[in-house]
Image (cartoon, rainbow, N blue to C red; front, top):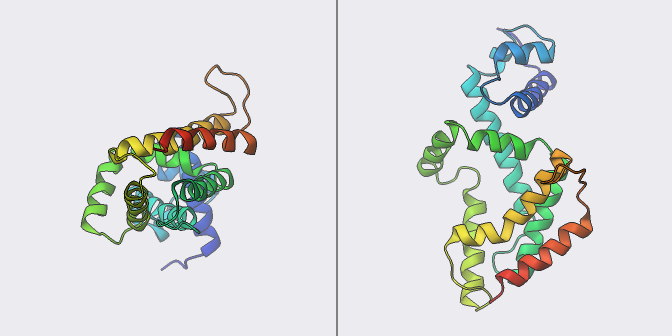
Length: 203
């Protein structure tokens, strides 16, 4: 039995995410992964049963890490503006530090794997993102109860609260805006947008 090498395993995970972001899930193969890692085709199978096992474990690991960082310092009992500011700061910094994670999850979301993970979340309440989702739902509930926020479907809250940030991050990662012109996101842009989002959400 071949010995597991942590450094090699981490390289395999990183290269897998890079390939999926660059070539899409349809363009991702174990052969391509092995070539990118400069290892034999059999090496990834030391760590994963097959391609699906690798992708599932990548999503769970990346999701757990993201959930931990997004939840850092977030108090569901905080005011609307305070809580949102922590969420924006955490999401913004995480996306800048991990530029491949957002496009990686977009690939997963638009694939058959999204249904698989939805089922897994329902079957395993303690799985990643459940704590984060519960904290955010409690936060929204608390702000409504205090009269800071109009009661709206969660999907509407999410779209107003976070879509502007993710749009800016997408422009930044692509290096261009909607008109195809060069774009670099700055802290000033982020917090100007944040202020407008708070005004839109406040009752």
